[in-house]
Every structure is written in C-alpha cells, then in structure tokens.
Amino acid sequence: MIYDAAAELAKLKRTQRTLERKAKRAKCVTAYSLTTAGNPRKILGRGNKTDLGLLGKVDTLILYASPADESGYNLCPWSTPGCVDSCLGHSSGRMVFNSSEVARIAKARWLVEFPAHFKAQLNKEVAAHARRCAKSGYRAAVRLNGSTDQCWEKLIDMELHPTVTFYDYTKAPLEKRGNNGVLPANYSLTFSYSEAPGSHAMALQYLAAGHNVAIVTRNKAQSAQLVADGFCGFPAIDGDVSDIRFDDPPGHWVALYAKGSARKDTSGFVQDIAA
View 1 (tube, rainbow, N blue to C red):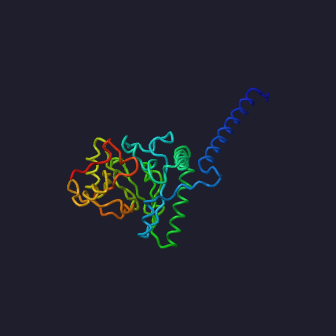
View 2 (tube, helix red, strand yellow):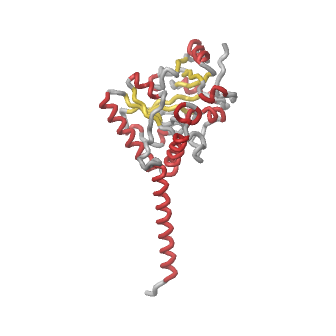
C-alpha cells in the first residue's frame, strides 16, 4: 500500500478542526454555565414579587433570561415596542443591575446554543426544588418566562415534574401554545394584553377559553377601578396582591399597575382606564 502523505495531512487537519470546534464549544458551555467566580450558574432564581407567594405557602423559582434580542437572540417573538421598553426584565426591581444583565445573556445563549445541556440542568433544578418543597410543606411553582416569551411546554416535558406547577405570561396567540391551545395539566398561562393589532381579540379568545388576561393600567387607582367594574363583560382581579397566577379564578382580567419605565409609556402597552 502506497503511503499518501497528502491524504494523511488532510485527515490530520480535519481532525484538528474538529477538536478545535469541540474545544470552542466546551469553552462556550463553560462561559455560560459558570459564573465569573467559577461557580455553577443557577438557571432558576427568585424575584421580589414571586417571593410574596411564600405568604401563601407557595415557593416559586423564576428564570430570567434576556428579553427580546438583548442576547443577540430574540426570545420574545411576540413582543411589541411598548413591552420591550417597559420590560421588567431590565427596567425595574433587582433585574436592572449589570450583573443581572450578564446572567440573563449567559442563560439565553446557553439555552439557544446548547439546548440539551441547558434543559438537563433545568430539569435537575426543578426536580431539586420539588424535593425541597415536599419536605417544607410548600407548594412548588416555577415561572420559566420571567422576562421572555418561549413555548416551554414544547421545550421540556413538564409532566416529568407532576408536583410542580409551571406558570407564565405570554403574548402568543392561543393556537400557538401547547397542542392548539391545550396545555399540560400542570401549566397555567396568562395572556398579556398589549398595543399590538389583534391583541384585544386574542385576549377575549383566552378569556372565553377559561384563561386569564393580564392588563397593565397607568396607576393603582385605575387598577382598582378595573377590579370594581370589570371589562368587556369579564370580571377582574388585583394581580399585584401576589404572582400566584395559577390560583386566580378562570376567565378574569388580571389588573397590574405600571412600574419602572412603564409608568411613562406612551406606546399603548399601558392602558388608560377612563373614569
């Protein structure tokens, strides 16, 4: 057999390129899954509002990843200019700070670029949360779209965690969620009303199907008025009392008053309820 030096060299170069790509991917996974201090990055954390649920014996963990295209990937495909500008993911509360921005971007890129690795870690954290709650006597809840709008019911098997209630807000049309609007038994979804064309019709569709619709008002007084009067033939509740959306009575508007930069919104995302 004649030794083919050129073929052997080409083979070595291909092997080298493969190893370099694997090394680059491993470096990216490390960058996303570890903090700057070298500690494992937790995918799930806590939020000021979700912590209110502790008073009702509900322990909620929340995933904050980059909203809209902050990470270079659009994780809010149904976002509107108003909700992007007002997003609680980067305009109010503890999520404003730079360290939080770094963590959001890392999680978003981790999810998009290494989905299997990300989802394996997410499932581990959800399972651990369920075990802790079983011991503490609290109900376990997880909110995966803390600052994004992904169809998580299509990304993970929620029914692997039957003692955990998942819940989220979304701007997606109902037929885009679950199996033509049918969701896992342990997943509760609240539609988020916005200035987008068709949002009002979609809101009524969600309400008629027994889901709830969150609507952001200009201030506390307008939220109180909405709760007192209802809207478009459907009753309303005060959504600022807690974030335990899955305990809300079905077919209700969920009144939330504007916070952070949303208080100055002029896009139509924040609704002005007439007296």
